[in-house]
Image (spheres, rainbow, N blue to C red):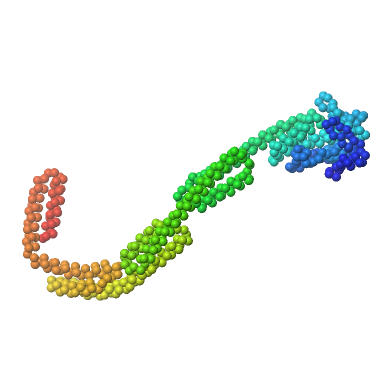
Length: 490
């Protein structure tokens, strides 16, 4: 359709007749539009996301009557044109009139052409104006329309429909405009409510981010993992920025209040982390000083041969090392290597000494086991004379045993018990012989037996006379005990 549009200069140069309009309508040269076949209606030709009438008016220069006639011929059916023409007339001078309510008013003049051509031009102007209203009606259903666009379009169409220089059903046109105004207000209300809901949702989402930051700031303490918490704050800040980019704009006071809270939480964290870092540096410096002092003590002890005492001192140094804290990863590794070197020097020397001692102790064990064979060969003994002879031999073995020295600790109890067993067997025979040859023991035994016998007789009498069950049971228990003693000495 662009190739049918002509400029005013071109029309005038061609010597075409001009139409006159009222004072509010510009006078423009026109040419009779060539006949065109009926075209689809504007609604059928509308494409998705078509510009609003306001936007169209801003971007497209006003079409000249000749161009309008050409466009209209292609855009409207003959029936649409005839229906619009029914609301107007053309007098013999080429003046065009339209019925506006109960009255009639002049809309323009188009001399030197037929009345049909003049009336058709203004009818198509009517249809052009109606098409703008239809276009806005379609735009009101578009998702991306803005309230400002609705206001601008209605303002422009209000001006164009107030007293249009067109021929057609003006009452229907104005009624359609009024309906559009109502629909526009409803759409603006819908847009406003949708924005309020979107803003409320955005505020709630951003508030969640703020509350997470505040919870992190409130949880700071001695056990805080500062690196992990810093990563969490960075993630929340990235989430905040992404939310700003991808969601509806929040009202400035509300946005500033939320940012103030978020920023305060971050400031709390940063201040706490700096304080922790300073305290950590102080602790590391102190730990380094303590560990260097421990290393100096370890170096002074490493050549000692007082194995037991020095081992205890090294254990004390290790306890102090653990309590000293950390001096930083790299410095800790270097300090530990120095301490470990001093400790290894001592403990390696102690182990070498132990290895040497273990060798001699194993040799001692072999010697004592040979003596055990000799000692165990002395028993059993049956008479006092055999016991006396075995005792003399065992005394010589024990003397040699004591001169040999230490054996491995794990074997010490085992071989000592074997030697003690030999001694006990000999001693049991010696004790039995002594008891048999001791007259004082026999006298003491006889006297004790007589005492027990007398006590038992007395207990029998008490038991027979006692009527209390508990006391009687107690006397019987005492009698049973003394009977056991009597049996033991017989």
